[in-house]
Length: 336
Image (tube, rainbow, N blue to C red; front, side):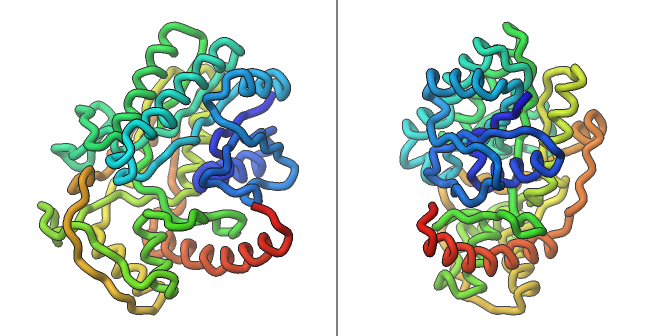
């Protein structure tokens, strides 16, 4: 049987595909390549260029490849963009997910792992925040993901589709073997932006808000290495294959770093100074959000191996150097 990875040519999805291939799994990728890259997919893995909302195509794909599991990453993910274009986010993240779920159920797919987000918690009253905390998204992005969570829970109760929802905190870093990494032009992830600024690819880094109720006034986030996150999906898939119950888990490390602490880490690891400017708050940004990960550790036995901010930054820096060479190679052969 085969696993379908939607958004498998994107940042997190491509790391997931690499991890699955390393484990000997059969994989097929569905991606519209709006933010993903064909070269990020391992050789031999079929890529179908298309939309998760195209039900006829998805049904044919499931039948052709005998897909029994879906790992669903495909989504729009930039919080400020969701504030500017809420309907676009509800279409891509919620409406398309609804279409995908319907096809999955009708096609007899057994396991479904959903890429959700800590943004469903909004600005939680406590830190760390556990999975039973009130859900109060502060942006259309968070709302769009929460709506899919609700649909998935209802579908799980009404059908034979088993699921795990993984709520990501802030994903960063790159494959230590440099096979893939965060490659999106104009990406908004803090560590990506800081690394690009350190390398002279951006003129400055903007810090949005310095008056939050945090130790240094800047937002605090829980940064998880992308390969530890991919491993969390592997243990979730194993859980479902063993007949485990439908469940929701946080994916983070349980401790956070402020924006200024991340900036300091990038300067320290890169051994380069760069320009930092203070800017007003952005709509939709909570002050502090850190994961309580006790549930996934206890129930799935998930053990992170790369919980180190400097190591995450080191891998992100190494990937940027690799990416520049890779882009030149891609341009030479005309691949996207």
